[in-house]
Each structure stands twice: as C-alpha cells, then as structure tokens.
Length: 47
Image (cartoon, rainbow, N blue to C red; front, side, top):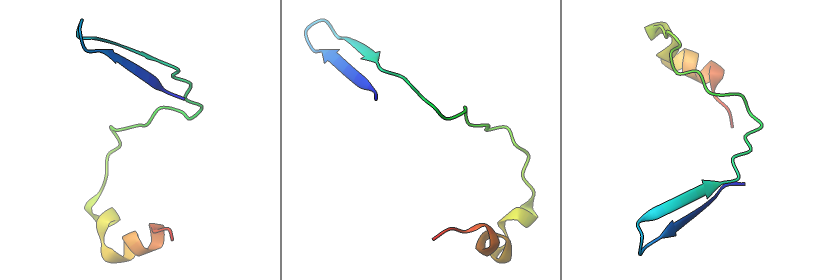
C-alpha cells in the first residue's frame, strides 16, 4: 500500500508504504519486429 501526503503550505510531500512484492521491470530487452506481427500478437494475447 502506498500513501502520499502533500503539505500545501510548505510545498513538501512524503511518500511511504512502498512494499512491492513483484520483481522490478526490465525495460532494456531487445525486441524484434517479428514479435509485433498480427499473428505473434494473437499468440501472446490474453483475454
């Protein structure tokens, strides 16, 4: 659970309660154009 409080008079904020159970996301994965064809997207899609 994440909480954020902002003090309008002083212009400060505090954020607390960071308790991520999931691993951090990886954003530097190399992708290939073939991974974005309609068939590839259908295969990986979720409903």
